[in-house]
Image (cartoon, rainbow, N blue to C red; front, side):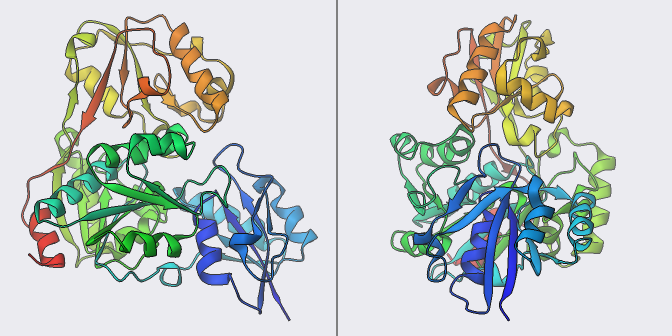
Length: 438
């Protein structure tokens, strides 16, 4: 009897689980994917060219809201949960929903999904979105380059468009972002690598991706977005933890898996963390992963033009997923507003329009910050119109990209940048050299 499987996802890990665990098997039929978290990614098909033999018509992608009906319609035997950055309470709710239909509920396997690279692999993950993984990845890349190594980064997937065309994507210049029709969310992850001189790959088929990356890399970095587990077997597994959100290292999936399996646990943003939060996270991790090496680091923020902030009524634009999926109450822009003496952080909600207004309805906890949402042309336009309408003196851009390159900002604005400064022993330099040699 063929085992009938449904994979719950969000246009990323779900496809990787299919590719590594189920593609090409005669004993399993994946009847469909479901999609959530990201707007506009359902009502598509995983194309036949990627699905392979056994799926001549591809595999349908449906909205997760229809999960129970789909299980019954397709007589599903097992549901695989394959997306990330959710609480274990949320996960248990999905488990009960599925098991009440009579189907089995399973989390995506870890080891089976890890492709082995022929090159040294360093994985940089996090327990939550917004921990500071991006600057950590850039710091590790800098260390490797100082060692004379050619570094290529591979980013966790965000294939929100034509899946066949996005199977393997290579970004070496800012022009490549336009070539691949990237969303703001994709640019936020890719552009910092590009501007620091690191080639970055992403896409859908992660075995094909790593084989291409191996052709031009001495060392490969896994840049594990959305607090997901590595898609590759790492030689060094580093996870960023957040002392600003104590307890989250235990209560979010699959961030807890990253924490308990990592070689290195990096405490980030220590300069703004309170001692009680740090102590709580340390105690939790000591029980969870007592053999891990602990590293401590600051992530100081810098404004390109502090005069745009000092004494001004400011609109603070922050990284979208950090505020939505990550549930953070502040980001780099907020810290900069306080550091450089803004008179007031102005609530943007009176001026929000369209899909930006809808985002606040879905995530009311965002509060007085403006998420840089840009999954579609409509969202990008709504973001631009919201900023234009806001009654503020200036705009603080706390996103990792040059937002003025994507939208018109008709007010004085300044970008905020942030880097990683690790200060404890053993240092990241020594840990990377120990792993790679040199």
